[in-house]
Amino acid sequence: MADLPVLRIAPSILAADFAKLGEEIRAVEEAGADWIHIDVMDGHFVPNLTIGPAVVKALRPHTSLPFDVHLMIAPVDPLIEAFADAGADTISVHPEAGPHLHRTLQTIRALGKRAGVVLNPATPVDEVDHVLGMVDLILVMTVNPGFGGQKFITSQLDKIRTLRQRIDQHIAGGGGPIDLEVDGGVDPTTTPLATGAGADALVAGTAVFRGGPDAYAENIRALRSAAEAS
Image (cartoon, rainbow, N blue to C red; front, side, top):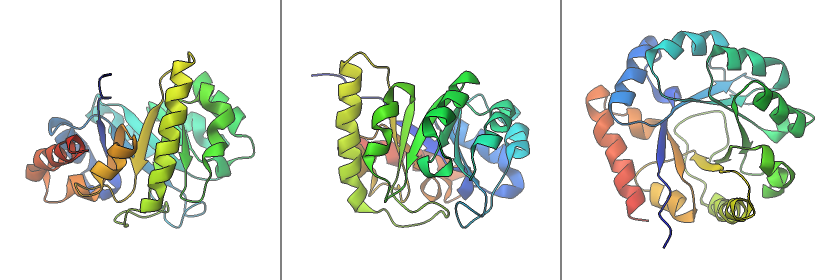
C-alpha cells in the first residue's frame, strides 16, 4: 500500500488577531503549522476587504513558513507581481478573476512562485483540466469565499474526490505533484470528510485560532488526529 500523503495544516490569518499579526504567525508556527494561509479580498470579487501586498511584506520576516496566498481579487493579473515581491510562496487565483487563466499561471510561475487554482462551490472541475501541467496546488472552496466562520458545504466532497482521481492520474502519467487543498468550515468534525475524499492540505481559521495562543498547538493536533480517523 502506498504511503498516505503528509497532511499540511495552513492556519488562515483571517481568524487571527489583526492587532498583532506578527505574534500570531509566530505562535502558530511554534504550534505546528505547515503553511500560513493569507486571504486577500478586494471588496469587489468577494464581499469583504482584507489586506494588500504591503501587509504581506511586513509579515514575511516573522516566519520561515511558506506563505500560501489566496487572491480573491479581480482583475487579478495586475497585482500578482506585487504579491510575489512581498514574499508569497504560493499564489492561488480564481478562473473567474481574469480573462486568461493559462496566462495568469504563466505569470506566477515566471516569477518563481508556486501556482494555484481555486474552485468556488459552483466552479466546475473542468476549469483545471487543461492547465494541470502548470498547477502546483488546487484549492477547493467548501464555503463561498469572502468570510470566515461559514458552514462546510458537503456537496463539494464529490468535487474533491474527482480532483483526487485526476491529480493521481496526472502524476501517474508523469506529471508533477499537485497539492489538493480545502478551505471553508474546516474543523475536527469536517476534517475527516475532506481528507477522506482526498485532500492533503487544510486551511483552518477559527478552528486553529480559537482560544488564543495557548490553545493553538492543541487545536492543530485535534485537526491532525481527526484526519487520521479518515
